Image (tube, rainbow, N blue to C red; front, side, top):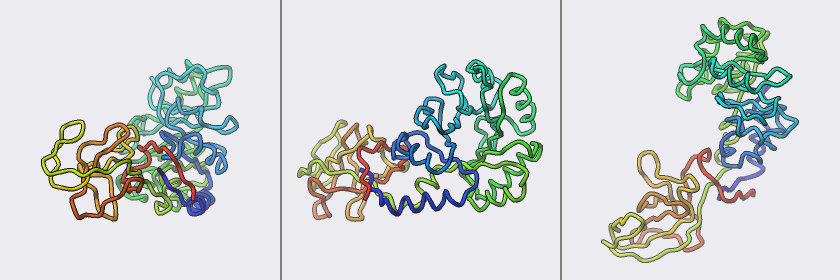
Length: 315
């Protein structure tokens, strides 16, 4: 269950959105834990345009709002709304967009490859790709730059400035992974260019104290040292209690990257007996340690972007 302090969460989201001229809320994947359809409705109150991950996520965007697709598509569905803006990073992506074209030219963003070296065209080839898009009947509405997570916001702003050095000021820039203050500096430095800032994590999860992820304890049984339990025949290390926690791989819950358990109770990490399986995780509590009862909640340490939440409790 995800518990959200409604007033605190809305205060953060609305205050941050109000500071950005050119905001593009990002609503992709699992909707940052809130569900994509619900979050799209919230995003529609913040800006007339929103970004989604793939062409298959466009139906989440209300019909009177513009959807920008962040991931290039090799096969554009024939039923895709024609007002959706596609991302182009190569001639192959152009071919896919042209095949989906109707009477009205399909709008596209040309992706410039950043130091992340993910898809996109090298900066010195961007103008050529823009011209090719135009010649193939596509309408280029801007260039897109996506810096990596590593580095500071100022590092990213500097990289963006460098990558745009050969791009006409008449071409709008759609960017991400810089702070609102650094974005404002870019807008002032290049005031003749239209700017758009994509925000996802910092918008929806920027105030983490408003969010709490938990799971309930479905059962508790006494176990003995050496007892074999679980799907994979794990051996209990000592006398104590085994907890059956109501979440698992079906919810996106897994051990942390270093193998530790993602579960906590009474500010102590619970020992994970084996990897979470589907809807249940098995944890061990040694004798004498704080032990939750059936029906109690334990804290879950997982990123919301990869967690399927059964229930959201707005308080």
